[in-house]
Length: 126
Image 1 (cartoon, rainbow, N blue to C red):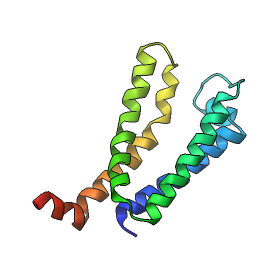
Image 2 (cartoon, rainbow, N blue to C red):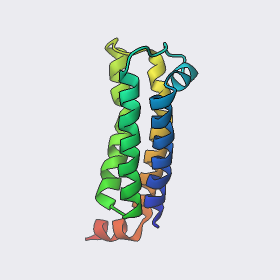
Image 3 (tube, one colour):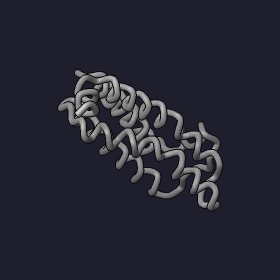
Image 4 (cartoon, rainbow, N blue to C red):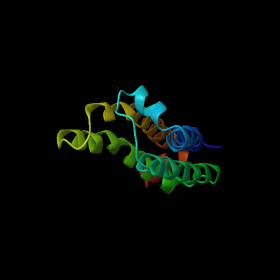
């Protein structure tokens, strides 16, 4: 397994845990970040979606699907900017940004692994 695939595999495990928590016990992670308790179904729907995403990440990692790795790194880096925009627009509390550091760390790990891989270096030289 390549270093990039390993980063995606570990991220899939993190996503599964986060998604399962949001699906089964949503107020635990929400309260950890100082946000108001969820009383409607939407946070559980989000949890279910995150669990489903974790499956896609797991499958991509196990199959060394590099185009997915590249797209994933780019989109995960954008998460704090999107959350920041939601906060600036008054749609979300400032605490929402606390969910983003792991996305950024995992995205940087994937990006660095992609950059250091022989396949990426060969395609850059061509």
